[in-house]
Length: 155
Image (tube, rainbow, N blue to C red; front, side, top):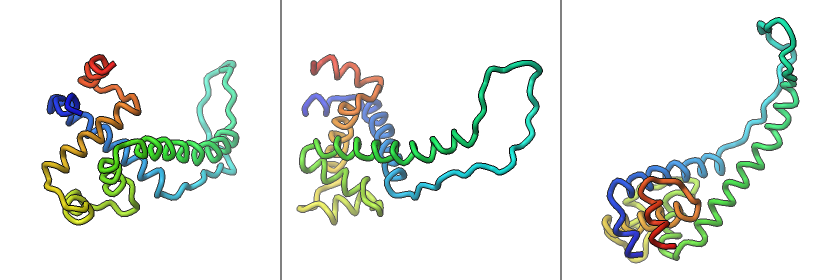
């Protein structure tokens, strides 16, 4: 844990940005309704070059594949994130779950002042979140510029 605290501010900022994007994608995948695509009855005109293009166009099949694969992809992604978060230490897991994985997304101060027991300060919250984000980045194998050096030091 000490080496995680020694990461540069730029690396910590990049880790935070990357993981917040990932957790936002998790939230959208988990809590938004999947809308199945439907095919058009008539196809639109498109200018085609003369001669064979050797491309088979089957928009109905593409739509059917998307309608089957997209919910499965979303579910697999959500399960992967939930499994990684479940491997975090207890306090970091609680912090990530309460702040980023609930249906309603509370503000940071609500988490560290009202939901943490006992309440913690904002600096302690930031340190815990940075540790949790770094551990998640390592679990997901995210390629972040300063984190490769951390891989080399720990292995």
